[in-house]
Image (cartoon, rainbow, N blue to C red; front, side, top):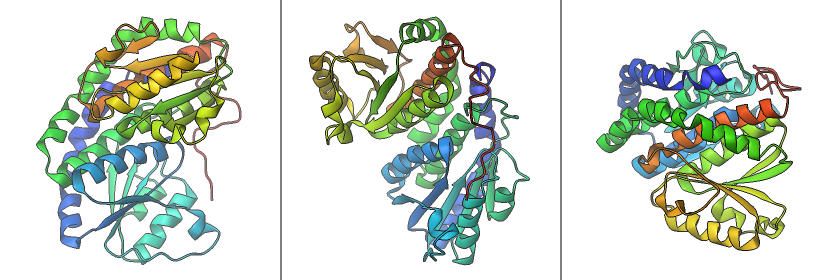
Length: 340
């Protein structure tokens, strides 16, 4: 896991380069087909990646995105009307039978289908009209790292080309260097892990584009450290869950400087007023006087999840080792999980 985290900068640069021509072709077909909505289908970390795409696509393309419920097809036999729909299936292995059936049904219903995998010979890649190959090398650790960030990058590229948005294109070009710069914080991340070695549970809070960071950080902690971790959007946390907050709670606020500033600041103030153990991962100078903050490199909000997620990947790896766990071989898990 540690080695694959360090491969991410180069992997993202390569994925963006090799997939640009095919992404342009997909966008041409999408526009000709008059696509009016997107359905996303994935499991695990790949499902979290789709949250990032949903925000970007709806913000920059104005196209509504929803998530499939595979059991509608695999168990209940439901038939969706998917005309004028783009169905994007995301899977590092491309072997999930439930995701495959969603794509097969989408093809029969006249949808346009795109697969994003790290295996161009997989069933999913072959079943889809288009396939985008991550080509980031075999990922040996059970916990997804480089497949996650390359999936984020290629989905971001799809949005940038679909929206014909130079701002987003330029931001994505900065991601490889951002990932490299984030690794310069390794000593501070390890120190934070040491301070967190007695955690039993925690919450991950974020808003907007960084909701993906909260979801993926919680999952990484669950599968490598066995800490009971739960992710919430800051706005949702007010609707009930905030009642659990007291001095015993460990709460991470994951925030990239941008349009969600005020929401993050307000939640931070509410949390610290309760006496909870609040840890901030951010690139925002607002927190510079706080003693429990780990800063990531400053960047545009739309790519800040890359820095925050890489930080939490390293944190999870370090904390797992401190706890005596093998982060590459979590108990009860295997690399390829086939569900129906």
